[in-house]
Structures are given as structure tokens and as C-alpha cells.
Image (cartoon, rainbow over all chains, first blue to last red; front, side):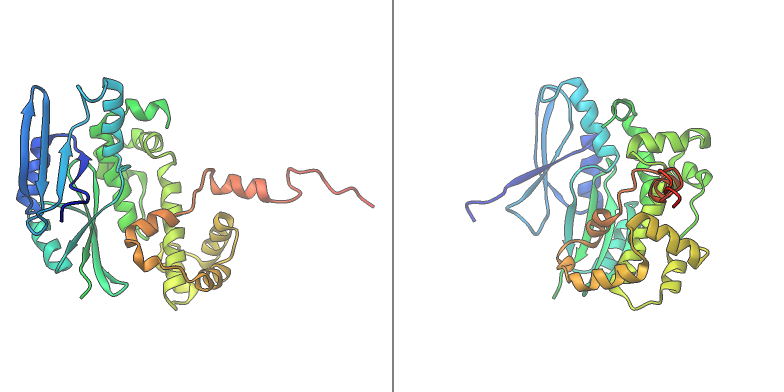
Length: 135
Length: 162
């Protein structure tokens, strides 16, 4: 694939915390972690999805003024950012594994519409839906 | 967005979100302020106000709309009797359920069941939690206030006597 979406970013409250969450608890890998002064470009990647990167960015200077950064941080913390969906082979097994590692589930796995889905949040408040792939 | 939202501490908001998530996960349970305040680690005296500033509605009203949404989903997706749905969505009495349901949606549970089934939408193509967030009724005033405003002849002009 040479065209398409390569990076989609999330706002997180703390990049180290987000990195630990997405890598240690969700099994992503670090793709890029580059600093330039206060700015840190950090992206992670799902091991099965080499053409897509999830950016983990902190609102703040030099990109945002203080008031904008504060607003963005508040929006993330109250779960107002757009939905995210993770597809897994086995939702219940993934949920069990992730719960054991301390992931905050907002919805236990439910069978519906011919599949199984659950919900969790990252430490910042971004909400993920986890859906079992339909076979 | 009110000015209050922006000045609320993100760390507090994250904890308030946890209380909202818990109501979403189990709206059929009783959620007194003391329990919600506990989930959020906020003093009971401050919880309701902080929640309202963060999410625009008081916690009990948020719970009410979530229960109505859940009931609507069960009416649409299951053949459960209405009594059972009332019970499963946290109401103690069928009468209160029916009255509140009508106050909020403008229709009875039976009518909603017929309408929703006739509509045949492709909701299975949208993740279920998103559907349930989107279908939660927007209750901008207290049910009692809505009831008062819609009741004919209480505050409105009286019909002239013939």
C-alpha cells in the first residue's frame, strides 16, 4: 500500500504513561519517539498493522497556547474525544488478559449482533471499543 | 461549553468520568450520590455540582436518560415483556417507568417498540456503545419541569366557561 492513512493521533495527558499503557498493556510497539525541545513526536503501532501508526500527543506549547491546551486536556479527561475501535480475535480472552494487567474496563464483554464487544479507557480518558472480529 | 468546564481540573474530570462510566455500565443499579462520589473520590457535598459542570446534567438525570435509552434498546431488540424491561432497567414500579418514559420520549414503551421495529436501521454496523451513547435522550430539564410545562391547563390560560 502506498496511499492511505498513516498516522492518527490521540491526545494523552502524559506521554510516558500513555506509552506504558499502549505498549505494556495493549501490546503495541513504539514506531517513532523523537524529541525536539519540549516537543515529542511519539507514535505506536499494532504488531499486525505495519502501515498504521497511532500518535500519542500531549496538548501544549509550542503547538497550543495554554488556554487551548487546558481545554483539550479537559475534553480528553471527560471522555469527549471521538470513539476508537480495536478489533481482536477473542474479545473475552483479551479482556481477561488486559483486566489482569490493570486496564480500566467500562463495559464487560457482551454477546450481541453476532459478535462480542467490550469497552475500556486509556489512563487519559480516551474510550476504546474492543470488538471481536466476525469470522 | 461553560467557562466552568475549562477551569475544572483534568484530573478531577477523569475521576468524574469514572462515575459516569459506572452508571453507563450498570444503569439498573441504584446510584445515590454517596456511591458516585465514592467512585470519583470526591466529597459527597461537591459531587453533584462538579458532575453537572463537567457533563451538563445532574447525575440523577444522566442516569434517568441512560435507563430510558437502555429500555428503548430492550424494547427494540428483545421480546421481553414491558414489566420485565422496567425491572431490568432499574425501576421499582411499572407505573413510574411508563410515566417517566412517556414524559421523556413523548411516547409509551409499547409505541416506541412498534416505531423502533418499523424503522429497521442498520445499527449493527455501528459499535454498540456508540449507538447507546447516541440514542440517550437529551433531557435538558428535570422531568418534573418538563411535565409541568407540557401539562395543559395547569399554568396555561384557562378555558373560558361557556
